[in-house]
Amino acid sequence: QVQLVESGGGSVQAGGSLGLSCVVSGSIISINAMGWYRQAPGKQRELVAGITSGSSTNYADPVKGRFTISRANAKNTVYLKMNNLKPEDTAVYYCNADLRLGSHRSAYWGQGTQVTVSS
Image (cartoon, rainbow, N blue to C red):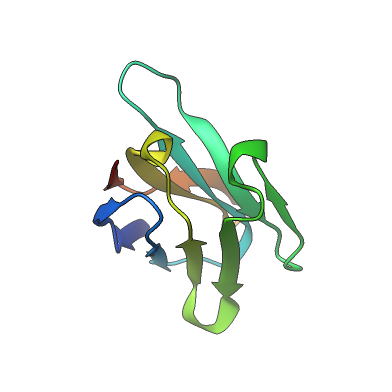
């Protein structure tokens, strides 16, 4: 059974920092792209940052220069370092991973972790 388990959310004041982690476990052959998404109340889920298996990265415009995505392949883990947080960053953050399982590949989601930024 495949699991993506996120950790590191919490509450912080504007201008502060938080770090998120997501560990992939289970019977996987390989992990392709990984990413972080977020969903604020009343809004659609949106991509925050993505990273390929070769560690190429992309970021949503609102977080460029403030957030950094990275991965540790040996640990099946993806990270999101968030600096200079703003109230508009408040959302549930979800980890996503494109996994190869045997003969097929599929995208999996974590359960989400709350990030709250107060002004």
